[in-house]
Length: 284
Image 1 (cartoon, one colour):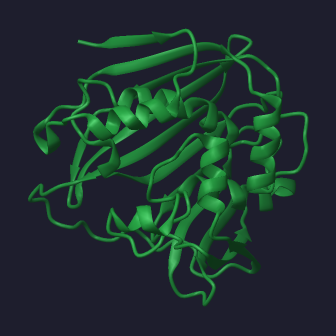
Image 2: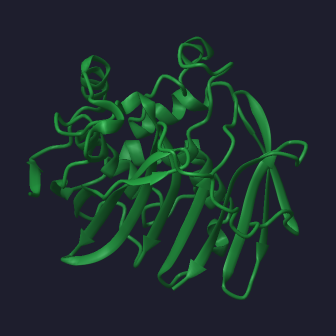
């Protein structure tokens, strides 16, 4: 049986994190509910959007950065993940993949309707995966959608599959940039994603990390800001697979190749040895 939560305003992500910290969840045996959440007539805050551009490196424009609808939808994602019927603890989830499809650019102050829903879980060798699917409508038409794939680590008894074909290993074009120690706090302020693993080394250590790590969606936004002049004007899809975390502070190397179908890219450590994420942009 499906159910829908209809909101009249975006919930506070801070209060949702507090709910997540005190909630008791059933763990790996629970079932992901057939649940969705809807918020209509959402308009971006001009100041927040401007700050997001600065943190991620996007230039000024009359339309939102391709990743910004994710920010507007994030409180709805949280609403799903802290619901009483959702079985997994929020702070134990890992964001492993993200696909965004932009059918047309969305104006900076254009009202949008957002719907987010939970997808069916899948057992894998590393645990249980599920999707958070987001649809953004503008002027009554689908303008943007995304699939965020999350992993809850647990034993499943499934063997590790054969490795997929290798993604781009080395790009013809390379750009280096720094990920400063405070980028997690800066991105948290503009995104609402205040997961403690991103905020400070001390809070990250409580979850087993030696230092704070950069948000995966900051890395995705930062590389798309780098590629902004090359992004298709027609509908396109940008997919990333998150690999190894970027510990803060750090320097990273962004490499990419232009292909017949779009752009392939990889984000590595400064030495060019370890991949932080891989992905591609495909014109539709």
